[in-house]
Image 1 (cartoon, one colour):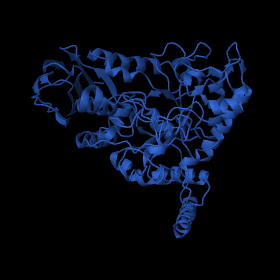
Image 2: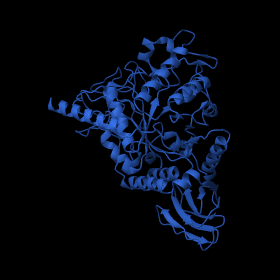
Image 3: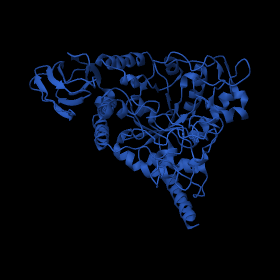
Image 4: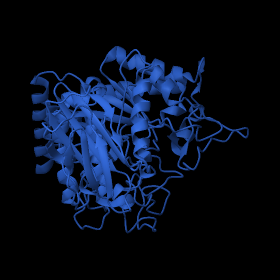
Length: 514
């Protein structure tokens, strides 16, 4: 009882302080469109879950992740340089035909309610006020908050509102691809939208804006028509012109996950008003030539130049759909992703646990559960990927080197924000095809990034041409080699043997190659 009274008093006092504080102004679109966002994707269900017995699961007597206990980790993220959270769906999850013992966060039972498990039952405060408190505390620390809009609905939702869902010739709901726990929404098509579904999305926008969120990330945005998004974005912008819309869409996606689904490609989504999209940086795991990275950067530059309003992209090198980088190519790939996110013309993007080298390997994964909150009796997981399906422990690794790189790189992104937000992007001539090199230049400063996409073979001896550089210029190391490597400068050339999977970053003062 005393704990309940204390928490209620604390929340009332905090809410009062928030009301009296200077009004928060949403600047997320401006931040994003200038490539200044450093985004961390989090699942509040696991974000600060208290796994006291260290078995990897949050058992009945342990504390699940909530809006309120998430606040405890905000100072940690701020110190690490994160300035934006992507909060995965906060809606109640479906319990029928579910995956995992808690249900996927991307299988919502409702779009207009909050997941009751994200509330602190001891607080005595309404769950929406708890959500507002979480967002307010983010804002106090200079952390903006994007919330996730699921693309489909759960089977539970279908049973309650079947008019919202697409049906086949036998009048059965559609399972997109192998997403067995969700059913495909019936969005309608351009010129004939499903008004009931559209109105539900309006209610969703009203709810999340009322909670103080700064933007949305649209899950598989390609599954809704151009007009659906154009109208929804216009509606949100009429309420807050700075409200961000980020599309989960890729230029490498060519078809929908179901023959019954609408498919709106990435460029049409940008036409509809989305501020940015995912791009295809997740393909780095398959790239073997430096030109493949450079080509994708140039592709996005050319794409964005077509629009009258600014557009941008995230460094989608690692997402909740991707294997942990340390399982693919170890610490070296994680460090490469960190410094690419920092130095490329992208918004940095990570998934909770990445910053410490989490592998997302759950020893209880896909085994029969002692207890389930859904009709799935197994701890369903995608091995090596972020857990979206169970009440699992906070994702974290023990790699301090990755964490140090993460913190240092984020500081440099802020220190040299003019270069990284306004500077030119110049691919540099490289003598080895597995190596990439590029320069970011603004004013009288140039930052050169060099990396080796060959993670297996011996050191590569390469020559890199840096236009206008001469022997008077003295490169300063921002990120040195992860192995033994000596950089030799000869007039306009860098000459070095670069280790497998290595990435290096240098600052050159009094040099402009814009």
